[in-house]
Image (tube, rainbow over all chains, first blue to last red; front, side, top):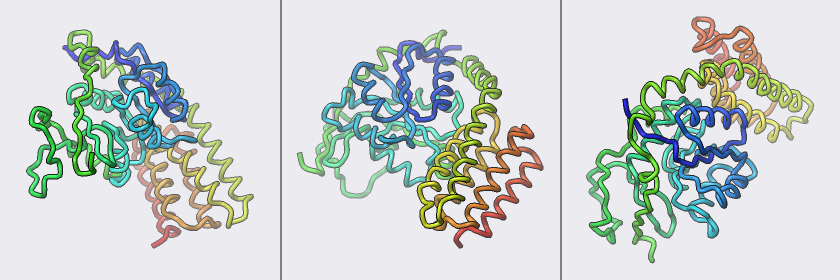
Amino acid sequence: MAGYSLERLNFLVVDDNKHMRALVKTILHALGSKSVVEAADGADAFKELRHFPADIIICDWNMSPLDGLDFVRLVRTGKDSPNPFAAIIMLTGHTEMHRVVEARDAGVHEFLAKPISAKALYSRIRAIIERPRPFIRTATYFGPDRRRRQIEYKGRERRKTVKQEQVVDQSSVGLSQAEVEALLSG
Amino acid sequence: MSGDEPEFIQPPNTLKNKVKYGPDGVDLDMLEKAEQIIANLQGNYLEWVQDDLTKLQGFYDKALATPEGERAKVFKDLFGVAHDVKGQGGSFGYHLMTAIGNQLCRFLEGTQKTGAAELDVVKVHLDAMRLVIGQRMEGDGGKMGENLLRGLQAVVAKVAPK
């Protein structure tokens, strides 16, 4: 059987719990990753990013002094951010819908509810590989396009300056029912 | 740029250049092996979780020794550890630990009070976690696990705000 090789990807794992970091790192190594760097909080992670070109950041929400959400905002909109386009997977036990929306609005690519498994983590990595999204900059947001589904929109088109050549096919993108239920079940 | 004129940016797709699709990639066999490696960490988890149980006991003792009106910070600390228990148990086959941790989290974030009754709720959840680990109640714990959760839910129902 064939699949995506993760061998050349750089992963940054950010979690204040060393056991969770060990678990994520173990999974990534088992999936063939060679380059995994750890950080214990958002501030440490931001420092790491200055010299470690992370392709995918896997970060926890609950950390201090800089929590996961602040870290994501810093990566996306910080003036000295080394990589505002880095793919970010938010790893969290906070799966209530308002929390999901909050993280989405901070600019994360994917959510992964704890407790995690190898299959669940890989499914989010695969989604990032297979479905690259354009980034959007507005007065209040910078991050991956939050419109993950192709739905018929009957309201006023607020994206009136969209250039046709920049529109990407998103027809296959969307949260599965299982994901939505997982997120809603908290 | 005005607020209602979003700018679309196509970031450089470096992943596409770095990730090859082929026989050496992640397939079902590799995923199964990865799941097995995690399963083999169960012994480590049983050691790690003792740290969490010790922390929970420590914060519980600290809350007891703290005047009721000043316990908010300790309750926040209790929530943090319960959240870790919730987030880890299921990865290592202890789904009942995740369920108990989740219930304690929901209770702690929902309650406005930090009195003796609330501390009793914390204590029974801590005792239940100890029982699950002590008895090696893997998965959902079967009938015993079901009874345990039902008992904890009854305690929460008595104390939680209506």
